[in-house]
Image (cartoon, rainbow, N blue to C red; front, side, top):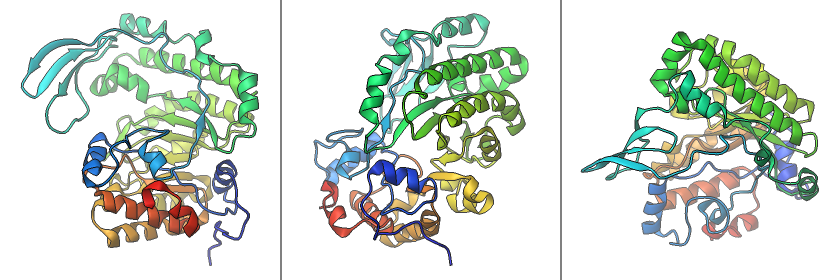
Length: 388
């Protein structure tokens, strides 16, 4: 019989203690309650179905997360992006019924819908296509820019030492951010036509991440590192696993090695779609937690745990489309992941942002039943504003 990490007789823990123990397969008093957010259209629908009008998308006071008792996490506020950022007005180049073509300050030209369901823009021209374009981005990636650590490290350490919430830090992006600058099709060709340029972009980012993190993590106790890629789709990754391993692998490992040297051993990347071909590469490179585990695309936490055992940590993996179907389907979906939760090293929540086809009452039912599954006491559930 499988041992469960859940022991509701244990004394109450802080969220931080609970996170550390849950992600290290140790017993906990109850499970961590996290979610992955909501589409704007979902919030609009829920406002018409009973969600108070002052509750909005986002985090903090009067957010849907706060309203439904989602537990906090604190991020060390390092700046790993372009500095200074490209600022200025968006130029409207053309406007037609239902759509608008506009130019962003960084040079991106995109077509956006102005009617109906808002979607990802259609990109017409991306800002980086050659070495000259890259030069204007590279000069904004100076790791020594003082604004990247715009806080007193020792003072923040004193604030966070006894923080009751998990403390995290950004891990960066190694192929996803370059893809955003170059474009999906363009970077797929660039790795063949201009491999030196692709390598220089990724190496520049890696040096930035290494140098900034090396100034912070020796001083601040960090519980997790969070990265982002989004380079997979329903049919798998947009880059061949061998190429990802060759170009990204050694560089990513430099950063995860630095993190682990300072005790950060929960390291995840946010990647949608079917991630299965990249999972062994991420694990080899030191990224041990996969998120958000889009089930419909094949990234099933149940199957990943079967294949990788306790070598893999997991977040997400509750099929969002099941939440639109009804109470019986919601219970089946929770039951499907229950054994993985009890095994440990897994935080169950929606496998992406909750879509607009999920009724408000369904979502309330899902949250209540998820908390029940994770050992939350009835009184604690009833204290959550959105479940009263």
